[in-house]
Length: 166
Image (tube, rainbow, N blue to C red; front, side, top):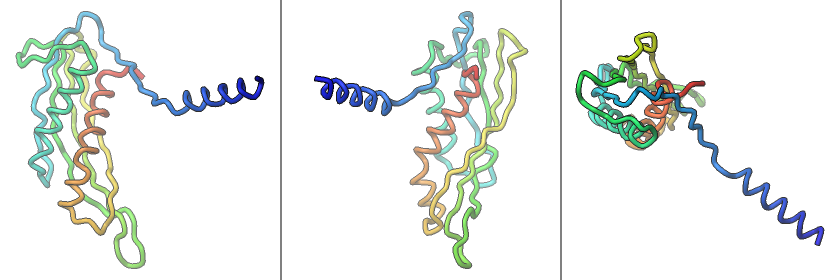
Protein backbone atom coordinates (compact mmCIF):
# COMPACT_ATOMS: atom_id res chain seq x y z
CA UNK A 1 0.00 0.00 0.00
CA UNK A 2 2.80 2.39 0.91
CA UNK A 3 4.62 1.57 -2.33
CA UNK A 4 1.49 2.25 -4.37
CA UNK A 5 0.98 5.59 -2.61
CA UNK A 6 4.58 6.62 -3.22
CA UNK A 7 4.32 5.54 -6.87
CA UNK A 8 1.18 7.63 -7.41
CA UNK A 9 2.73 10.60 -5.60
CA UNK A 10 5.83 10.45 -7.81
CA UNK A 11 3.67 10.03 -10.92
CA UNK A 12 1.51 13.02 -9.91
CA UNK A 13 4.55 15.23 -9.25
CA UNK A 14 6.11 14.18 -12.57
CA UNK A 15 2.95 15.05 -14.46
CA UNK A 16 2.71 18.42 -12.72
CA UNK A 17 6.37 19.15 -13.45
CA UNK A 18 5.86 18.64 -17.19
CA UNK A 19 2.90 21.00 -17.50
CA UNK A 20 3.47 24.09 -19.61
CA UNK A 21 3.73 27.39 -17.80
CA UNK A 22 1.90 30.27 -19.46
CA UNK A 23 2.40 33.86 -18.45
CA UNK A 24 -0.95 35.63 -18.46
CA UNK A 25 0.00 38.75 -16.54
CA UNK A 26 -1.89 41.05 -18.87
CA UNK A 27 -2.49 44.52 -17.53
CA UNK A 28 -5.30 46.44 -19.24
CA UNK A 29 -7.32 49.03 -17.33
CA UNK A 30 -11.08 48.33 -17.37
CA UNK A 31 -11.86 51.59 -19.21
CA UNK A 32 -9.76 50.51 -22.22
CA UNK A 33 -12.06 48.82 -24.71
CA UNK A 34 -10.58 49.31 -28.20
CA UNK A 35 -7.25 49.04 -29.97
CA UNK A 36 -6.03 49.91 -33.43
CA UNK A 37 -3.16 47.86 -34.85
CA UNK A 38 -1.74 49.74 -37.80
CA UNK A 39 0.14 48.02 -40.61
CA UNK A 40 3.72 47.34 -39.54
CA UNK A 41 5.75 48.74 -42.43
CA UNK A 42 9.00 47.24 -43.62
CA UNK A 43 11.77 49.85 -43.69
CA UNK A 44 14.65 47.40 -43.44
CA UNK A 45 17.42 47.44 -46.03
CA UNK A 46 16.37 43.95 -47.14
CA UNK A 47 12.62 43.56 -47.49
CA UNK A 48 10.93 40.21 -47.10
CA UNK A 49 7.52 40.90 -48.70
CA UNK A 50 5.73 38.42 -46.40
CA UNK A 51 7.02 39.75 -43.08
CA UNK A 52 5.03 42.99 -42.71
CA UNK A 53 1.56 41.68 -43.52
CA UNK A 54 2.05 38.43 -41.61
CA UNK A 55 3.50 40.11 -38.51
CA UNK A 56 0.67 42.67 -38.47
CA UNK A 57 -1.90 39.88 -38.79
CA UNK A 58 -0.23 37.70 -36.13
CA UNK A 59 -0.21 40.61 -33.66
CA UNK A 60 -3.89 41.34 -34.35
CA UNK A 61 -4.77 37.66 -33.83
CA UNK A 62 -2.84 37.56 -30.55
CA UNK A 63 -4.59 40.67 -29.22
CA UNK A 64 -8.01 39.34 -30.25
CA UNK A 65 -7.33 35.92 -28.76
CA UNK A 66 -5.71 36.99 -25.48
CA UNK A 67 -7.43 40.24 -24.51
CA UNK A 68 -10.99 41.50 -24.28
CA UNK A 69 -10.14 44.45 -26.55
CA UNK A 70 -11.97 45.10 -29.79
CA UNK A 71 -9.81 45.91 -32.79
CA UNK A 72 -11.06 48.94 -34.71
CA UNK A 73 -9.65 50.98 -37.59
CA UNK A 74 -10.68 54.44 -36.40
CA UNK A 75 -8.58 57.20 -34.89
CA UNK A 76 -10.65 56.99 -31.70
CA UNK A 77 -9.17 53.68 -30.49
CA UNK A 78 -8.11 53.77 -26.84
CA UNK A 79 -4.78 52.09 -27.68
CA UNK A 80 -2.99 52.78 -30.95
CA UNK A 81 -0.15 50.47 -32.03
CA UNK A 82 2.07 51.18 -34.99
CA UNK A 83 5.60 50.45 -35.99
CA UNK A 84 8.03 49.42 -38.65
CA UNK A 85 10.67 46.79 -39.28
CA UNK A 86 14.10 48.42 -39.13
CA UNK A 87 16.34 45.39 -39.54
CA UNK A 88 16.09 42.10 -41.38
CA UNK A 89 19.64 40.96 -41.93
CA UNK A 90 22.10 38.11 -41.53
CA UNK A 91 25.42 37.96 -39.75
CA UNK A 92 27.86 35.14 -39.09
CA UNK A 93 27.65 33.82 -35.56
CA UNK A 94 30.02 30.86 -35.69
CA UNK A 95 33.14 29.89 -37.61
CA UNK A 96 34.56 26.42 -38.03
CA UNK A 97 37.94 26.26 -39.66
CA UNK A 98 37.94 29.15 -42.10
CA UNK A 99 34.24 29.00 -42.99
CA UNK A 100 31.01 30.15 -41.38
CA UNK A 101 29.25 27.33 -39.54
CA UNK A 102 26.26 29.24 -38.23
CA UNK A 103 24.46 32.48 -38.95
CA UNK A 104 21.87 34.67 -37.27
CA UNK A 105 18.85 36.17 -38.96
CA UNK A 106 18.37 39.46 -37.09
CA UNK A 107 14.96 41.10 -36.91
CA UNK A 108 14.22 44.44 -35.26
CA UNK A 109 10.82 46.11 -35.06
CA UNK A 110 10.35 49.68 -33.81
CA UNK A 111 7.02 49.88 -31.94
CA UNK A 112 5.08 53.07 -31.26
CA UNK A 113 2.39 52.71 -28.60
CA UNK A 114 -0.13 55.45 -27.84
CA UNK A 115 -2.56 55.31 -24.96
CA UNK A 116 -5.29 57.80 -25.93
CA UNK A 117 -6.76 57.69 -22.39
CA UNK A 118 -3.46 58.37 -20.58
CA UNK A 119 -0.59 59.89 -22.54
CA UNK A 120 1.82 58.95 -19.73
CA UNK A 121 1.53 55.39 -21.05
CA UNK A 122 2.85 56.31 -24.52
CA UNK A 123 6.20 54.83 -25.52
CA UNK A 124 8.45 53.87 -28.40
CA UNK A 125 10.82 50.93 -28.26
CA UNK A 126 12.87 48.60 -30.42
CA UNK A 127 12.29 44.88 -30.16
CA UNK A 128 15.11 42.72 -31.48
CA UNK A 129 15.46 38.97 -31.87
CA UNK A 130 18.16 36.81 -33.42
CA UNK A 131 17.23 33.53 -35.09
CA UNK A 132 20.16 31.14 -35.54
CA UNK A 133 20.47 28.87 -38.56
CA UNK A 134 23.09 26.69 -40.19
CA UNK A 135 25.45 28.43 -42.60
CA UNK A 136 24.80 25.56 -45.02
CA UNK A 137 21.35 27.04 -45.67
CA UNK A 138 20.86 29.84 -48.17
CA UNK A 139 19.39 33.09 -46.88
CA UNK A 140 16.15 32.36 -48.75
CA UNK A 141 15.88 28.84 -47.29
CA UNK A 142 16.62 30.15 -43.79
CA UNK A 143 13.90 32.80 -44.08
CA UNK A 144 11.36 30.23 -45.21
CA UNK A 145 12.23 27.78 -42.43
CA UNK A 146 12.32 30.45 -39.72
CA UNK A 147 9.25 32.49 -40.71
CA UNK A 148 6.80 30.81 -38.31
CA UNK A 149 9.27 31.18 -35.42
CA UNK A 150 9.98 34.80 -36.33
CA UNK A 151 6.28 35.66 -36.45
CA UNK A 152 5.49 33.91 -33.17
CA UNK A 153 8.43 35.30 -31.20
CA UNK A 154 8.21 38.85 -32.53
CA UNK A 155 4.44 39.08 -32.00
CA UNK A 156 4.86 37.61 -28.48
CA UNK A 157 7.59 40.14 -27.66
CA UNK A 158 5.53 43.07 -28.97
CA UNK A 159 2.42 41.88 -27.14
CA UNK A 160 4.32 41.39 -23.87
CA UNK A 161 5.96 44.81 -24.11
CA UNK A 162 2.55 46.47 -24.52
CA UNK A 163 0.26 44.41 -22.30
CA UNK A 164 2.33 42.69 -19.63
CA UNK A 165 3.02 44.34 -16.34
CA UNK A 166 6.32 42.73 -15.28
